[in-house]
Image (cartoon, rainbow, N blue to C red; front, side, top):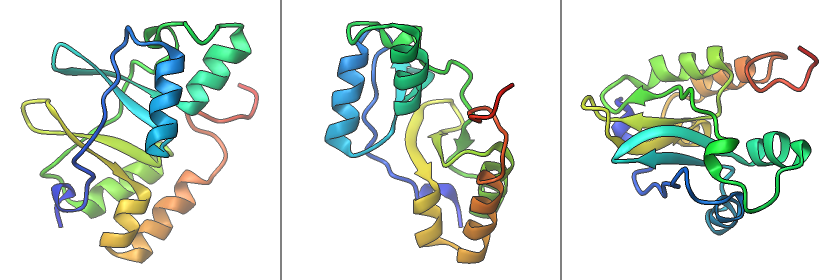
Length: 145
C-alpha cells in the first residue's frame, strides 16, 4: 500500500509570519498538535505544540512571536508514492508520530500519522513503529542532552 492511500489530504498550513497564538488556535480548531509551515508554495518547517511550549513560552516568548522563531526548520518527510511499511519503519527509527507527505516535485500533498497507518495497514508494523518511537532519546527527547 502506498502512503497516498492512507494519508490525510486536507492539511492546514501555517505561514512562518503568523504568530504562536495563530498556530495554537489552529491546532485547537483541528484538535492536532502539529502544523506544516509553508512559504511560497514550499514546506519550510513544522511547528508543534511542544515547540510553542519549549522554544516559545519556556524561553519567554509571547503569543505574538512569529512562528519562524520557534518552528523546526529541518523537516523529515516522505513521498506519497512510498510504501507504507517502509515509512512505518522510518517513523519508528526517527521517533516521529507524524510526517508531512510530499509529491515528487516537493509539493505538500498531505500528512501521515501513526494513527492513519495503524488503521489502514498492518497493525503489527504500526505496533513495531510505536515501540521504536516510544524508546528514550530522539530529536525531541526530554532527557538531558
